[in-house]
Structure formats: C-alpha cells, structure tokens
Image 1: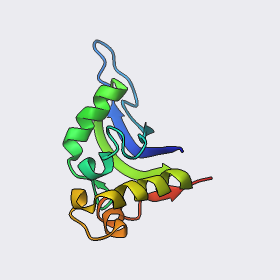
Image 2: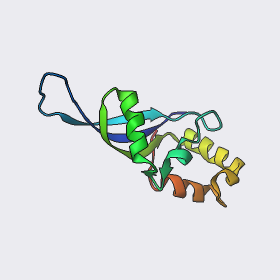
Image 3: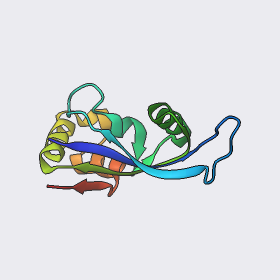
Image 4: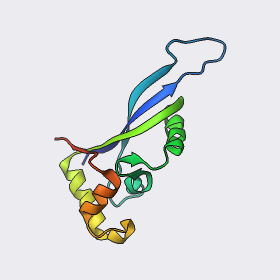
Length: 121
C-alpha cells in the first residue's frame, strides 16, 4: 500500500544580514499516509474538511517545523494513493462510522476529503 497527503506550500526566506531575490518560493510537500487503523491514520479526519485544511494557520506552523523554513501558505491538494490503500482506508472507516458522525463510508470520504483523492497505479 502506498499513499501520501499532498500539499502546495509557499515559503519565504528571511536571511540575516543578506538579501535574496526572490524571497518567496512554492513547492509540493508530501506527507506519507500511515496504514489505516494504526496511530495517526485519522489525519484526514483531524485536519481536513471537504478537501480543505480545517486550521490553515496551525498547519503552516506544522509545515514550517517539518521544512525548516517560514511557511506563509499551505493548501491541501489531494490524497495520492494506490487502490489497495484506498480500499483499506474505506474498510477501516466502515469499522466504526460513529468516529465520523456519519451513516456511510461515502459520506465520510465526501465530508473530509471531498473530491481530493487521486488513485494511481
């Protein structure tokens, strides 16, 4: 199984005693998705709402810590996954829909990820 949460990140350099041009850059950051049912698998539930970050300012701080630069903007782009991971994720969601206050797996996927799932071979 292979999956990652993909983010568009803008960061700014703030060097000491020198100037740089440009000082703002864009990149893509991929955070590996842990296996469904293991610690951290609820990342999508805890951070996303309809394919958008629920608290962008907090996640800018998280991204800044991970990248070691001043992140000024971060946007969730997609859950990039293979079919095996997506199937396992759906199965794990189905185990306890009360975790998501939902009546179906599709409702959970729509509620938290919207249309931001990209299945790759």
